Length: 189
Length: 428
Image 1 (cartoon, chains in turn purple, yellow):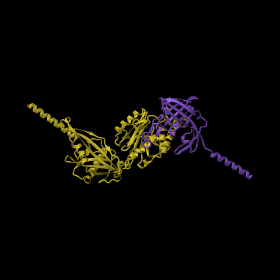
Image 2 (spheres, chains in turn brown, purple; image 1 turned 135 degrees about the vertical axis):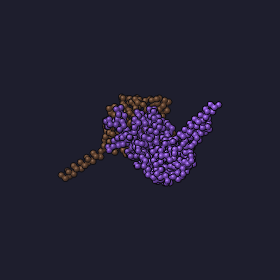
Image 3 (cartoon, chains in turn purple, red; image 1 turned 90 degrees about the vertical axis):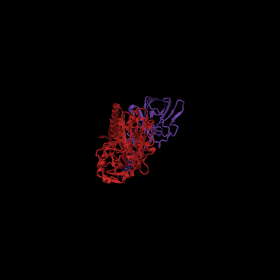
Image 4 (cartoon, helix red, strand yellow; image 1 turned 30 degrees about the vertical axis):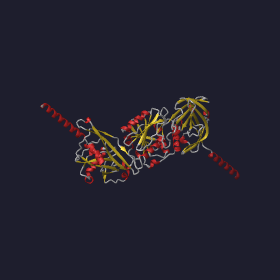
């Protein structure tokens, strides 16, 4: 009898331990302020996957190619706040009309980031935060709306920033190459 | 012939009367014994301070007076200060400026000092007794604070001396005179002036405000004096016009409101450049979130540091105007050491990313309903101000920065209530 109770107790402790040690999974819609440290924000309904792919559009004579991939449990580090989130990661290459590469974040060790934060299921769209080009110029929000299986609509709203010569050396290329526009259609390749 | 002589005599008499009237209006100092103050300065002066100093002088004249000349108060100058802290007055004897007396307020006490400067004497001498027919005032120049905490202020005026008083346009020459006063902020911390310690009962004398001791002044008054300064206002209006364009632009402003040249940036970015000699700056946003972002707050710290170790760090400010009449200003509310906070590029990137994501969250109806958004889905005032204060908190600058909203020419102080919700209180 005593052995039986010992076994039951051990089992309960084991189950409690396993469940408590399990990482906390939260939906993508969770507000940033409600994400605890080291929590996992998951794409529970697999809504990010349809955006994966390579897309192209032409804007003001430049060819813009987007490379969108999905990264599970991407480590998000915001200083005092860090957690893991399933996210889309966007890289891009912008070429001018003669084929000269103006900016390439796919094939270079670029610090320019374009990462999704939330899905807007009711609008069939996903929100990306753009760190901006060099020196953070053009930091802003990008909205991708899925129109059908091969097309997405693009909107980019850049924000203003004051740069400082101590952090942004004179001569830095601060031109924003991404299309600053709304309703630009990208086609899946 | 008799008619001609009569006519000439009449004309000469008329001219003499006219000339004497003009002379009285421009040059004649007031009766030194007069208790009335009627400014004849070429600049706008701090009349309240001058009148209070006149009263103190009259009460303690025997102790303060060092020469047998008299102060001519109507020509006293406050050198662009209007906070009851400083004035200089010429001492005149037999129509000659023989010295200048300056008076500074430190907290609730005023102190006097004779300058014994020939240059300053000449400056007042020409203003009061020169036979000039017209003049040009130059903007006041402030030197940067040196390592001993001394800042010098120079006021200059150019006067046109005609060859003929009766025909000032027939020819003549310009003369420029300078008044120079070097302020030591170390003096202010421990006034070592030669005479004084007299109680000051002016509007600032009874309170705790003591600008010369670098204590903070009323944020409402401070912003009011900034945004109503004609030069600053004109520059802000210019930026408002430009906020509907594509380029970001900026102005820096000196303490007296003198603006820098327009700083033309690029699309969505501008660089204030060197801030030495400038108290604050304004820039315009064209798109995006119409609020002061982490990089703007960092700029405020730099303006505070640019006031120097012994300068008035809390005079620093950064303003922003955006489309739809959005206008915010932040003031630094700390001392030099408080402004020595630095942020690495990685920290700034983190602050910027979290700022964006929080702004995005605020716009999400599923999360916050319509609390933080306008009917068109953009962030409303509450959302913008909440975003700002959350950012300030993350930067560890709570209580070191004051946020104000300017709308319909009124200034709103934005603060947090006990629930950390931004609330606004209008300045009176």
